[in-house]
Structure formats: structure tokens, C-alpha cells
Image (cartoon, rainbow, N blue to C red; front, side, top):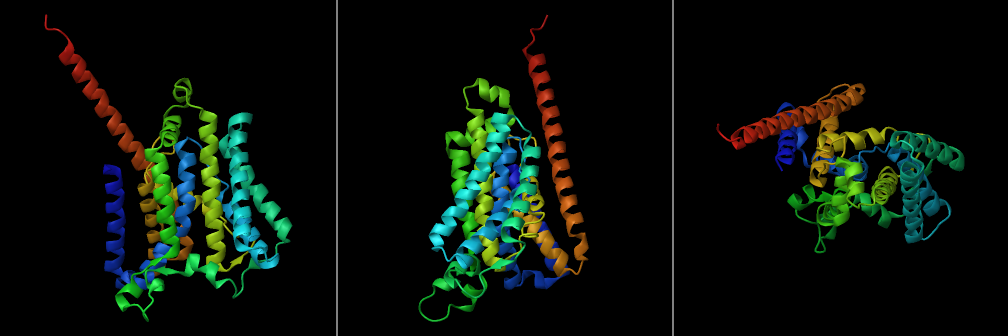
Length: 344
């Protein structure tokens, strides 16, 4: 909880500084825009978090966004599939991708970095070939489906005329609401189910977890499936939000944003530690920084430099905190040993 509180204070400090420098930062439209992008990228980070908790990494989530997003638009717009069937097929494809990653890591013994890096290239190449590099989109159709990204609650549920201005200004974007719902489900799974505790135990010490009777292979596969399915959900939302999907560029570098949100949110890259709320706050910090770059007139070319520094600072702070805690535990153990020794 102390770590989450610290991350929340950091988010608040960045927002206050940005608002002091440029008051339009607190404009309702700008805040809703930040929440919308937090919702979209947050789904990627939530899935990525489970893989990192096991001590692995998933570099394929950006390509999954391009792959699933292009197929979703093609199924719905090109083949005129029923929307539920198209979405079900897309999520099933994402699930199979995660299953393949998990099996290659656990049963074949390949490194997670290599497996997901290959996935990054394979999915991008396959979708470009399948779609012939032709941009997919929804045009001006399927407005009901687009409510998943364009909707605002509760203002869009107002039945008696137009909602009051305050309600309209501060209604929450649907992507953020979806993120919160998914976050609650995954938080219950992580903190209230035995499988969630198994995943954390696996990340802390895989050998000890295996000797304790935990099916570590199964838990690793589940983590990769969660990551891929969350990326598949994000892919559909990204395609609806942007209304077009370019197979060659959709989702490029998104895996870096996903990892950055996890690191800033307190997920240890060594595995075994993590909190869903912390990840959501971490993603919000990354999006606020990105928004501040635009609002404050900073050159957009510095975007990746800022993200890189954020990740470096996050990892460095995590290591410093761990070292301090380890030294403190060592001192306490020495004091306990000294006090327990009999006086001669």
C-alpha cells in the first residue's frame, strides 16, 4: 500500500505541475482524453503485468493489437459477420496466441524474450500478407459498436433531454470504464483466488513453487493467455477508436507503453510482485506525461526519451528500495541474533 500511495502521489504531483504551467491541462476535454487513452493502453499493461509477475516478458502485445484489430475490422466490415461472432473469433485467436506463447516457454523451454519477439515479427508479417497492406476500417457504420470507445457515462444514459453541463463535462469515457471493470476482475483473480497467489509465488521462486506442488507450467500458460486476451480486447477498442487499422503500423511500439505502465505501476521486472491498482495508476502517469508533452509545447520527438527515462527511473527506484529493505532485514536479523545469545 505504501508503494501504491507513492505512485498516486507522483501522479498527483505531475498533474499539479502541468496544471500550474498550463491551466488548460485541467480542461474537462483534456482530462477525458487522458482517461480514454489510459483505458486503451491500460488493458495492454494489465495483461503484460501477469506475464512480468511470473518473471517473463511479452513483447508481442503491440503486434497482437495490429493483428486482431485488422481482422476485427475485416470480419465486421468486409465479411459482414455478426458482431458477436466476429468478436468471439478475435478473442479466440488472441487466446490461441497466448496459449502458443505459454506452451513454447514451458514445454519447449524457450526464453520468453525470444518467443514473444518472434511473435512480434510473425504476427506483423502475417497480417500484412493477409490484408495485403490495405487499411481496414469501419467508415461511418456500426455506431452502436463504436459506443465502446466513443460513449460517455453517465451523460449518454440521460433520458430526459440533455444532461446537465457538469455531468456532460465529467462523464467517464467507456474505455476507462472497461479498464476499471477488467481491472476489478483481474484484481479479484490475483488477490482472492489461489491461482493468483500461485502466479506471485511462481515469480518469486519458480523452483520453490514447483517443489510446493504448484503446477508452474499451467500458471505460466495462464499468464500468457491473460496477456494475449487483454491485448485482443485492446485491439478491438483501438480499431474502433481510430476507425482505421493500418496492418503495417497499427500497434507499433505499444509493447513499450505496456511495459512502462507496469514498471511505473510497481511491477518488479524480476517477478513475484505486483498490484492491479498500481498498474492502472502507472499507465495514467505515462499518459499524463505524454499529454503534458503536447500541452506544454515540448517537442513530440522527445516522447520516447521521456518514456525511456520513466522506465529507467522506475526500475532504478525499485532496485534502491529493495536494497534498502534487504539491508534493514539483515540488520534486524543481526540484532535478533545478538539479543538471543546467552550472556556469559
